[in-house]
Amino acid sequence: MVNRPRTPLDRRRVVDAAIDYIDRHGVVDLTMRRLGATLNVEAMALYRHIPGRDQLLDAVVKQVIDDLFDDPRLKDDARSWEEYIYRIANAIREMAISHPKLFPLIATRPPDAPWIRPPLRSMRWIENFLSSLKQHGFSDAAAVTAYKAFTSFILGALLLEAASRGGDLAEIVPMSESSGAERAESYPHVERLQSLLAEDHNEREFEDGLEELIERLRPLLTSENSY
View (tube, helix red, strand yellow):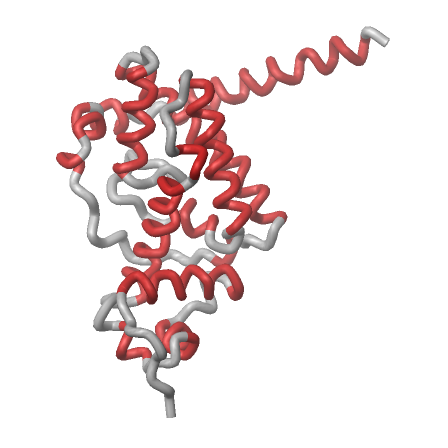
């Protein structure tokens, strides 16, 4: 017989328990039955708060991303756009290190809109990023380009690091489209710049990134030849 929970069950407690379960066992092992067992309830009790496993995974991703807003490094306004980028990059990296088995889920879970890029995959965070860069003098187009470049860099770097710490992309299985999508109307910069965000420049961005990498490597050759 399953014991009754010591504290009342609510949506946040279910989501927090799912995050903890994934941290310990990975995404594939998570089922409503197993999660219920960790909370000392039958699986059916969870459905009063979360409709199903897919919605639970959506809630897990949203919670971990939203928790970034509580990072002390992001509480105060940055003095420059470089400082903002540095702060947010390190906050995301710490999140990935803390949740290496969960980070691949953040990277692969279907977003609310096709132009939303992980790991800054909530409209709230995109609004924060765009508005912060706009405050430091970026044009609309430059802010969107910076968002795309930043997410491409941070995602690639942190997926590799998460994998080295126990994360496994092979665990992430195809799932149904994300539910409960946010509305862009709640975020003025996101709503106004949707068309720019949706433009497909993947090939150019790849080439630009490759060129930047080559430029970063070039001084190494010069340094070696100087000895």
